[in-house]
Length: 149
Image (tube, rainbow, N blue to C red; front, side, top):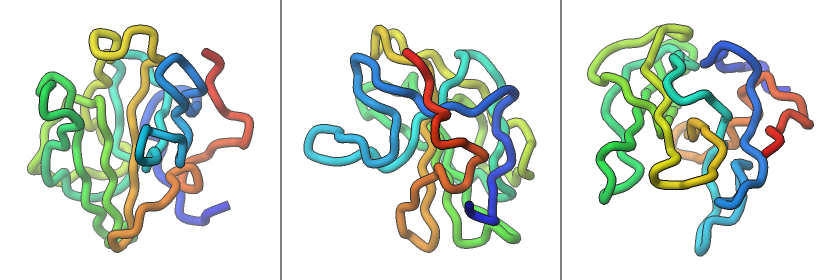
């Protein structure tokens, strides 16, 4: 287990999106010509999402050019999280501000208009010094902690 763990970024248990008609939320899952560079963590649309690290919310992160309604945030880590970048999609919040681990970031968005039948989730990606890492090692997840869909 990684000794550097993210702060719980939601109220309630953390579960990775299992298989649904749109694929899997696991790190490395196939995405056509590429692989999934993050994990999808199950949420309830509208719930408050909290910062997993101390950092600066430096910009909005838009997952789709053709759908400005779905958005996200990019956090550059500070302090013990220096060198880390955390990208979270399907989250509406403000940027251009410092944030502490555990502070509110924004609200989980509803994906059903774009992806009917998908398990509601927030996508989480991390990089350390530019290298993509599996976020699972930074969360208090057990190996069987995958949502039933």
